[in-house]
Amino acid sequence: MPARIMNNHKLLRGSGMKQGIIVGASSGIGWELAVQLAAQGYQLGLMARRGDCLDKLATSLPGEHFVQTTDVASAEQSQTELTSLLEKMCDVELIIVNSGVGSKERLLDWDVQRQMIDVNVRGFAAMSLVAMNHFVKRGGGHLVGISSAAAHFSGGLTPTYNASKAFASNYLNGLRSRAVRSKMPITVTTVEPGFVETAMVEGRPMWLAPLDKSVRQMVTAINRKKNHVFITKRWRYVALMLDIMPNALIRKFM
Ligand SMILES: NC(=O)c1ccc[n+]([C@@H]2O[C@H](COP(=O)([O-])OP(=O)(O)OC[C@H]3O[C@@H](n4cnc5c(N)ncnc54)[C@H](OP(=O)(O)O)[C@@H]3O)[C@@H](O)[C@H]2O)c1
Image 1 (spheres, rainbow, N blue to C red):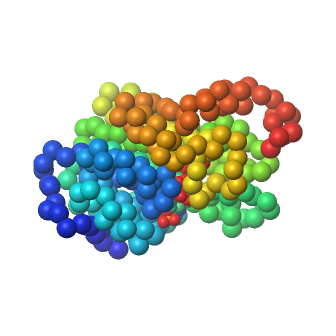
Image 2 (image 1 turned 90 degrees about the vertical axis):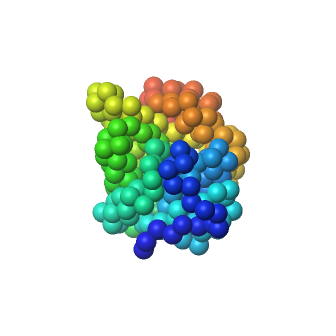
Image 3 (image 1 turned 135 degrees about the vertical axis):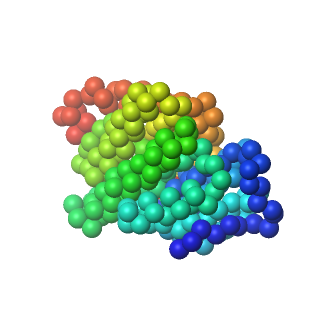
């Protein structure tokens, strides 16, 4: 489906306005990232499967924005859609890959596992790759990947989700190394949230952080071009502990 331009204001092409794309903008963290970045004056490209939610978001934001539906599980099709959105927008300097799925894996069910691998691994890598190639061509830019503190441990409750996020964090680290070696001004930011209050989280787990506060911390890290950030900051210590804790002990809890 072609990208739509939402809102009634005149499009400010070539005005020096910052442009960014959020993959997975239709709810939760992605939606709030759009709200906070648009408030900073970004013109945004908004991507996800639910076009009606993206339209609603785009019309609620100040300024004029682009909407492009995509299903990152169809990785190659999604790469084509991101590439064509990049061509339609003027000069995108920030791409946030936030799309992700997660659920408790009560049964070891292949349909559930495959969806997580398709979206959180294949889709994540496919979108990040287009972003990096765009920044190399452009001579600089900023890729932000939303991984998870779950990347730091594996447990029986959500083995596929944890492994998919370990892939995301590890992959982003590798892309950052390539960017540094290339000496091009390309920043890669890894975001590892603990629990953030969105539809993805079931119940009220420990240290569930409000959405607006969590996204404010992400936006600060993006503005400061950080390599890595835990959301909220206390998850740094949890991750450190989990990194050194023996599996036999982790198994008692997860
Ligand atoms: N909430 C937390 O506690 C938490 C903690 C750590 C990490 N995270 C990560 O944060 C990210 C955002 O999650 P959230 O909590 O904000 O949950 P959410 O509200 O469910 O948002 C998920 C986003 O990903 C998009 N998405 C899912 N499948 C997609 C697909 N096949 N193609 C394109 N887009 C797709 C969704 O859009 P459509 O459904 O419209 O496609 C939606 O915009 C995820 O990567 C998640 O793993 C969340």
